[in-house]
Image 1 (cartoon, rainbow, N blue to C red):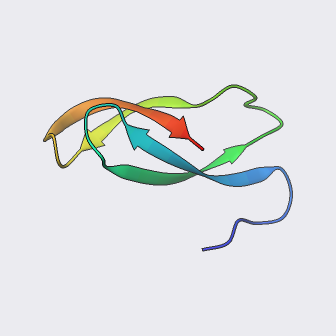
Image 2: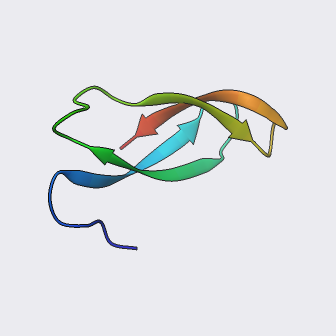
Image 3: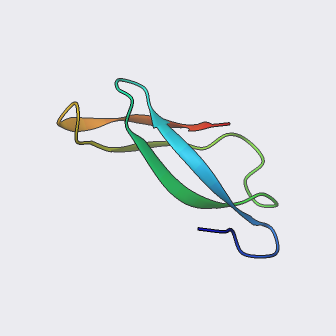
Length: 54
């Protein structure tokens, strides 16, 4: 899946408790810091913190 043209980039969100990964879009112009979200981790079977990975 390729990212669209412009300021939006495809980013990888890595779980803080397991090896699970989500992919999401991020606007680089509006969000300059690394993204951190609480999302459901199917490996840990609970909501955990996901951080933007390189």
